[in-house]
Image (cartoon, rainbow, N blue to C red; front, side, top):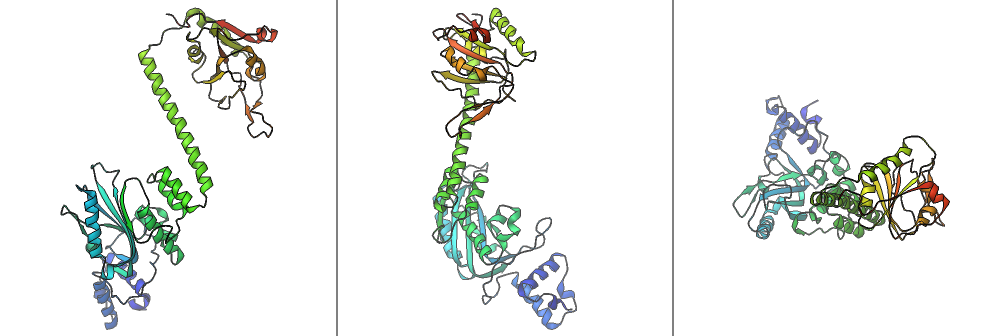
Length: 443
């Protein structure tokens, strides 16, 4: 079988030719028939410039996966390309953008003429250089190109810098995704979707976007797929607000993404509160150095904690009673009782909301500002720490119900001196009340 017979189509012939040449071989050294030798010479010349304009437009061929990255000479081939020019730090980005558009209008002619395109200038946010920008362009040309050089696409900046672009056949290859060898390089509808995804990437209002221009607008000319903007927000290139806006524009899956959006907002708010609260506590500790607790109060607390050393089916409740600003809440939250307390503000409320309680991590429960003993009586079946989970949050539908297990962890209530305390035998038997006096610490 001859060399020519092994490579029937032009595409197969070019791939075979490039493979042999990259391996250090020279086909012209072989004993070839005249027609085969002529075809080798013509192929070699075509790789040094554009192919004949008479070639029919065909979909971008699916390239076989390469191990260890690309090797051999550069080859630009196809009808759709995603270019990136790193143009440095222009003095006037808008003027540089207009200069690029003028150059593009002059360059995109003949075999490089685009049937559709999108271009954008963006700040290079990860660069250490201040004001550094880059330009993306997704372009589809009229006829298939096969070139061995990007020289025709070199852009000269206003500062005189000659910039040769990076080039990828689609978005996934541009970002280095392993899935770039799959459907994104397919034919027909898959190929069209790969091109449109690159158009969306260029047009998307990402972090750092400065200017955008296109003749192939999203939604008007092609449908935006939800996974496209999901990918951008996951890569940290898209703000969450813009992500939700794209979800609303596409309508499909908007409600689920909105729920995710709201859940993320709540999570980040809670994390921010924890961080800010920790910073505030550090400032307070620095401005107001901690004073030692009163020895008599400390001894009473230790005596009460002794009940948790031995196993029992229930425990008493500690009530710290005293005037406002006496330090009883700080004392209840101190490491005297444990390193990770859960504090719940009760006030005038009747409900016991301890859904955040986790018996695996929390050391003790602090119910702050309890206004009367009736609250303790109402929730005594929970606060005494029974050896089984207790259901709270009951409602007519049961949708807000949850189980809680104190697991024999200390429960401490802080009460102001004007709180109401009823004279009941159960309270006398199951609560240890300590009058803290004017201050819990040594003045």
